[in-house]
Length: 298
Image 1 (tube, rainbow, N blue to C red):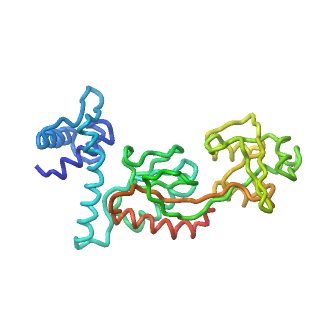
Image 2: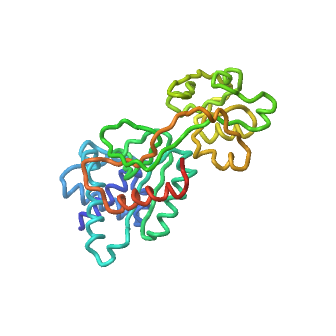
Image 3: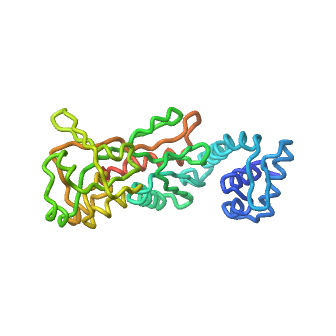
C-alpha cells in the first residue's frame, strides 16, 4: 500500500473529524479511507484515532503526526510538480484564511482571478474574524488586517488599509455634521466590537493624537454590519476604507473629519515559518502582491 495515500487519508480524516467527511474530500469511498488509515496505524504500530460512532479524535500519536504530515504532503506535491513535464501548472489544494469582511470584499475575488490562471488548483477559503492557528487548523496561508504579533509566523506585506468615519447624508441632515472628533460624543456611534479597541476611536492631526471614547446603542461584531447600519441612517461608523469604497462612490455614505488621520496598518499574507514554502503558496502570494494594487484596496 502506498504510504502517500495512507497519509492523505489520515490528514483528510483528521481535518474533517470523520472518515465519511474525509472520504468526501478525497473523492474516494468511506471504506477505502478507513482501510488506508488502518494500514497506516499497522505500519506505525500506533493508534492514530480514538473512534466513536459519530466522529474520530486524534490520539497523542495522531496529534504528533498531524503537526508534520500536511507539510510533508505539500512538499512532495511541490517537488513532483517542479520535476514533471507539466511543472508550469500548479496543482493540489491551498487552504486560505481571511477576516470575514475583507475576505468577502476582496480575497474571494482575488482567489477567483488566481484560479482562472491555475485551473488545476483547489482553493479552500475559510472566513473567520479570529486569528486562526495555522498549524492546528491546517491553513496554508492567511490574510491579516493589522499586526498579529505572532512570532511563529512569517509575514509578507501586501499593502495598507486606512480607516475613516462615515454616515448617511440623511443622518447628517437631521443631526448635523461633526466638525471635530469631540463632536462625536453627541452623535449615535455604531461600534464594531471586532476592532481591538472598539470604543476608542483615534484621530491624529499635526502629530497630535486625540482619543474619543464613544458610547453606542448598536454593538456589532462585523465591519460590514456596522457599515450597513450607518448606510441605513442609524448613526456614525468607524470603518476601514476598503469596506466602504463603493458606498462612498454612490453617495450612500459620506466621509467625515477628512482632515484627520485615523487608524491604519498593514494588509499582510502570513504563513508558518520553519519549512520551505511550496511553489503554489509562493505563487499565490506573488499574485496577491500585484492584484491588491490593481484592485485599489486601501
